[in-house]
Amino acid sequence: MSQTLINAMADLDESVLVSEVNALKTQGVAPLEIIQNLQEGMNIVGKRYEEKEYYLSELIMSAEIFKEAAALIGGDLSGANAASHGTFVMGTIYGDIHDIGKNIVTTVMGCNGFNVVDLGVDVPTADYIKAIQEHKPQVVGISCLLTTAFDGMKECIESIKAAGLRDNVKILIGGGPCDQTTADYVGADAYCKTAQDCVEYAKKLMDIK
Amino acid sequence: MKTNAELYDERLNRIKAAVALEKPDRVPVIPVGNSFCANHLGVKPADFALDVELAHRTMLKSFTSLGEVDGIQQPVFSPYLLSFQWLSRVQIPGIDLPENVPWQVHEAEMMTTDDYDVIISKGYKYFFEDFLMNRLDNMLAKVGPVFGYTPTAIQNAKEAGVVTLSPVVLCSPYEVFCGARSMPKFMTDMRRMPEKVLEAMDIAQTQILEDSRQALRAAGCVGAWVGGWRAASEFLNPKLWERFAWPYFKQLVEMTVEEGVLPVLHMDSNWERDLERFKELPKAKCLFSGDHATDIFKIKEVLGDHMAIMGDVPAGMLALGTPDQVHTYCRKLIEGIGPKGFVLSSGCDAPYNAKPENVAAMIASVQG
Image 1: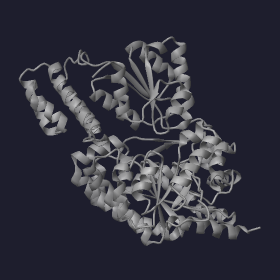
Image 2: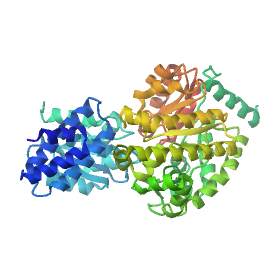
Image 3: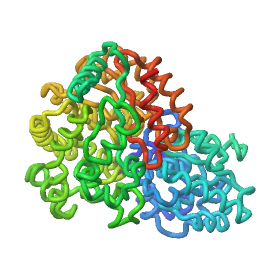
């Protein structure tokens, strides 16, 4: 356990983080252990975001330096998600290429201990279905910024149901124009106004304190 | 029967009264939208996107056919304007997308960190012109006809008795750099190389202020959008916002007021945390236009005595709601935000698939 690394990750101190990762590698610390320290730092980032000490500007930086550190570590990282609360699959629905909202939510969910599968933008229904079959998530998130994407969300959720997968997942929607009326229209379980709403809904669902 | 010239004066005075925080004879209504108008009148997005005259005629006809509007916010549209404003690529229907779907901004890292050095060493004008030519495929040639047609479009609207509120769009360096670098990259730049980013922003700001002043003088317009999109309070911690966003935005607003033009503060996303700061802007000289992400009743509470407010029928309600729901919401705004210092509009654009009967309900709601 490197408190220095945890703090560097939490404080977004890139230079300390890089030198500490290199030092731990030299000492022969297992890659998985280093990653777990980083994840612990990310949990603090998530907490600070929740408490409005951090904003999107800090979330983006945290994701950036986490990626940088993971690349430095290399090696076998399998099992890094073993301690996660559960799996969250998310994408921006087809017909819409906006990614900021989706990226906020995936980062915040990652910071809060969820294993996140990010499908990207302009995601066809078939990719959601494939991801649900493959990753068996507890929660699926569908994002959009365009009201023209509402019908795509509706079709996607209907297709997930037709594929016999709807009962096993909760589906959340979000994005600029979405509200409860949208959630009702597309057949989602809930609409999330903020990324924090998504975290709280998912934690409640999985009975995580 | 009033002439169109008389109607124009009456409507302009109504808007001016609202901006001055007075109570007009009724709340003015000034819709905004582009792809909605194409969809409403059955014009293919591909044709609308590439023919500025068609876009103008479609926008004017669409809104004036749905009721008595006091004005329109913009007289023309071209997706290339979005590229020009934000230095981003835009996917165009009929070129990058099917003919019948609206355009979309395609955010990508078009500007590199080396470009900050180019701006510092060679100036923003050099960088901007080179970027338009070489990274946005000679964008100046594409937006030139749009700018060239704008005075005619404003005149057409005037002859129809309709005020063009804000035909010019001004963007701070934050918005331009964020669009060109992509939001994630720009946010990391602010942390990794803050001094260099600020130096480039200061140089850009000088040029932007000068160019914007010339644009306002040439247009002779009532108002101009001074936009805030990516610099919204909800995205940035207060220290970064204070350093990189607010001072530049404030300067642009102050310059617009100096030029005798109304700054229409087109504020997308949530600005609630920093609403108090908008009191630093000249009193009764600005129009705060939120997109529904900032609680309009909170805007009223904080800024109601300081500047007029415009908005904010949400896009989702215009697309999925009913005329009754729209009417009820609009009356709540007219009575709760107005009747003093309020202009009714949609929150940002009326979207492509807004129902025309809902836009008509919004326009009619100012009559009672």
